[in-house]
Length: 258
Image (cartoon, rainbow, N blue to C red; front, side, top):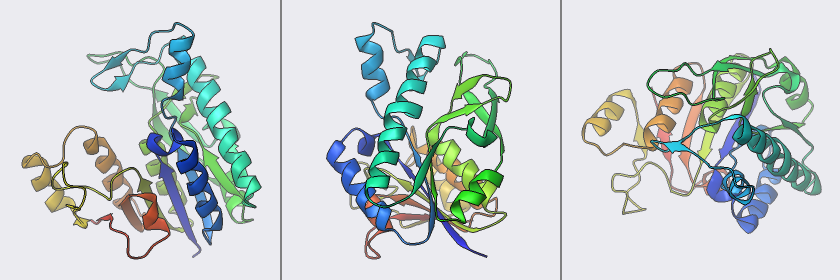
């Protein structure tokens, strides 16, 4: 079975032109089959503000109405995605930009309304990898933004951490998949004020204890839930840390285990 790396980069890289350019040079040189998933960074919010459109957040989560979905589509699938693809091509990494609608790759449904109506936010229901397999098997790198669709003509804003987890699970039937969440820290930290307090290994038992002890909380919870969702569904390896973990064997990072 062939090996495949699936890598997610967050807003801290997207928002910094130099960091992004440096990462894409190194990513282009990364050997083997690979898929890249990116978030949107702060550009969508900046554009909304310029256009006089209110960005509504509840508990740190964006409410996506018609106007903000239009902006997300322009920024995520347009400006950010195509800029990344162009830079990869400049570095001799043949790539194709994707939303979940392209090739019918990621189908979602609107998040149910409970206490909060998040608007046009999608929860992933199905990943179709047929088109993607053709590409990666021919050394073409898919580059995904954080948009999906419902196969009825509606686009959805969808969490990039969820997209990369679901893609990894979809590919795991056909490849030995390693999943990497790249962000600004060395990994999951025992102490958020100490960047060197990396927890090198987390399994399902230690994860429960870390939650009970409130060491893992807030925004790290959904990220780790996606990690465990992947590792429990045939994904071979899941790691969280700085992008250096992809390129340096000595780099600190967190490995997720069953």
